[in-house]
Length: 127
Image 1 (spheres, rainbow, N blue to C red):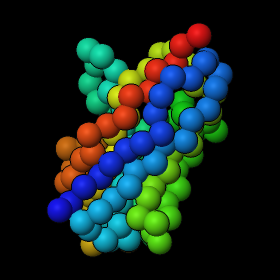
Image 2: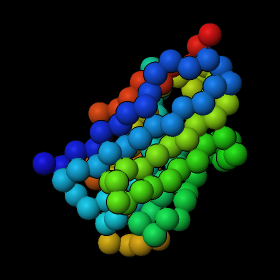
Image 3: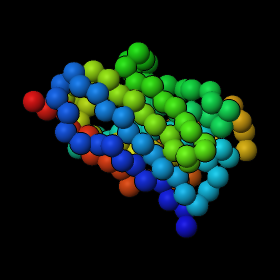
Image 4: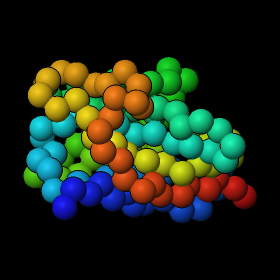
């Protein structure tokens, strides 16, 4: 059974850090690009970062450069999102998704081109 399971969310103070994990089962992680997204209440789901099969990173929001990073460990079937200097407006449910099977360097340019999604993990930034 194909599953993407996010973990690592929680409550963090402004300026704090979290590392989210996306554990993949039921498919071969190295066959897919993995993206991270977030959705705040009342807002559309927005892209954060993607890492291709070959490890090429694509950031969907330039404003996050220098604060967020993405990495993958194929041996552990896990993709990570490191988030630093978090702010209250970044409170959201964070999702990972798999897509782009077959092309090593490719990251889907938008959320509609991803094939599989996790259920999300809540991140709350508050003092």
